[in-house]
Length: 358
Image 1 (cartoon, rainbow, N blue to C red):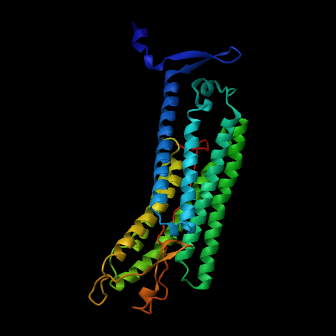
Image 2 (cartoon, rainbow, N blue to C red; image 1 turned 60 degrees about the vertical axis):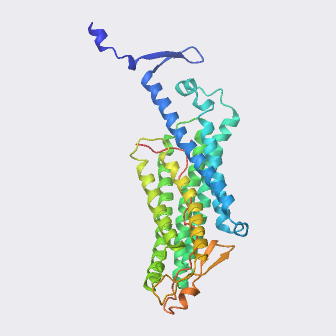
Image 3 (cartoon, rainbow, N blue to C red; image 1 turned 60 degrees about the horizontal axis):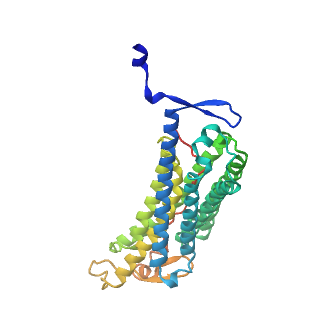
């Protein structure tokens, strides 16, 4: 009677055999954990896949033909396309032989094909390419808003940007090589956990630093506009909002992955940045088009003065025209030239990249 009372049917185990006939036990809780992990991470990657694909289609449909040659548009589209492929390959991992129950518990991967190994190595390489697109976009856009700084300050800012970007890309490059080695050799990745963590940290720091520099310079420009009575909500305010969003949200996800027991939390950082890029551009562009169709309000009457816009093939869909500000106030010699695109771009990725979890 007492044995029956102590029996817990949910803690039962069952026996499986290795290829040489050696038995080993698997408990139901272990099986439940494996299934739960696979379901959670599949939902995560499939959600990122769907969001990236939708935004890629929206970006291609809503961007005007004359803006599709701009560097920012190319970077945005390329980042989204890479992210779609990356997350698709991540999903294929959890429907392939690597994730079969017997293969996982017995560590017998004899049925894994060369294509499956190539799939995993490709994911790690795509993570690196995605980060390179992000860092290049960040450096480019912060450099644009700092174009009116004195030459020595601009050179200093550019040097800092390049140095930080090189650190992030360097750690990711090293992690990509070591991660590919562990995949091909089927060895536990615990020895490179520190490298994965360093890559996550440097990537997050670079995104936050670039975003902080962007919104600081943009914030000064907005304050100068406010002093002129130009308080109408427009592209500059949109870029400021998206800059703050890109500063905070990736940092939150980067910290959460160490404390929240959800698989591959850090992989969302790059996806969020990829989505913020076209979202901010489209929002700012739509706002500018709306304002250009509205009758301008004069500054003398206390209304928001109009800010001229012009297309630019090199920096983004729109460029706020600094001359319209300077003609009202010659003192605004340091007003930022701002592109109507966000300063964000991709950070950490995984599949079987390593997830640093609590």
